[in-house]
Image 1 (tube, rainbow, N blue to C red):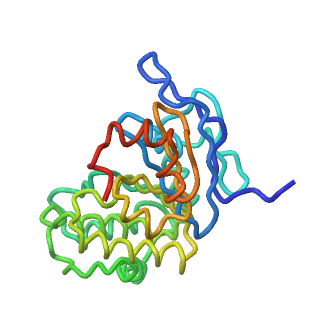
Image 2 (tube, rainbow, N blue to C red):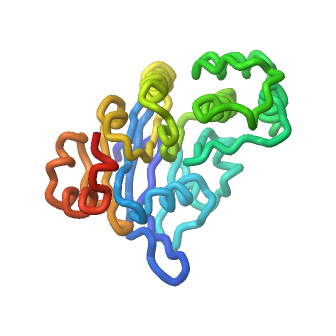
Image 3 (spheres, one colour):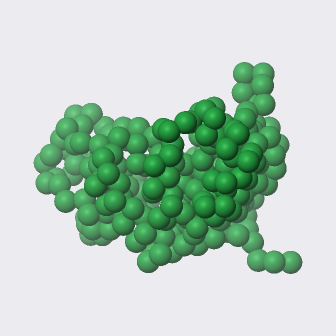
Length: 245
C-alpha cells in the first residue's frame, strides 16, 4: 500500500439543520504542500474546516493524521497532535497585553514553553510588537501575526487557514505571502488555505480545490481550474469580480 498522507479526509458528509452541507469530500495534503480551497459563498468551505479541525463531527467519512484515524478526536486533542487552525476574523483576547497572550499560549498545556519559543514563533512571522502593547489595539495584520505566533510555538505540522488575507491591503498580502512560503517550504508545514484572493493563491498554492454546494467540482493547478466550465458556471457566476484579480 502507498504511504499515508500527512493529513487527509475521505468521503466527508456533514448535515446541519436538516440539510446536507458537505457531500463526500476527500482531500490529502503532504508536508510542505499548500492546498488552496475556493468556491462561492455557501459552498461549504468553512464547514469543511469545522470537520477537519474537530469542531464538528461528520455524519460519515473519516479524517486521518499521520496514518492515524482522528475522526473522533475533538479540536483540543487534534491541536496537541499538531493540527493548527486560524479563522476568518482574527479575534484576540481583550484586556490582555501581547506578552500576556503569548504567556497564556505557552502555558495552555504541558509541556510549558519558554519565552524563547515565543521569540522563535514571532521571528518566523516578523511579529515585532512591544510586549506591553494591548492585544486588542493591534491592527489586523499584527493580530494575525500574534495568533500565528501562538500556533507556531507548538510546532504544528499542518495549518488550516481560513481566509488569512481578509482585511489586509496589497502590501500586507505580499508580506503574508512570504510568511506562508517560509512555513511551507522551509519548515515543511502543510497548509490548507481557504482564500478568495486569486493573486495570493496564484503565488503560493501547489493545488487548488473548488467546492460548490458542498461538492468538490474541480482540482488542479489554478490556471487549469480557472478555465474549467464547471468552475466558471458555479464560482464566477456568484463571485463575479470580487474573487478575480
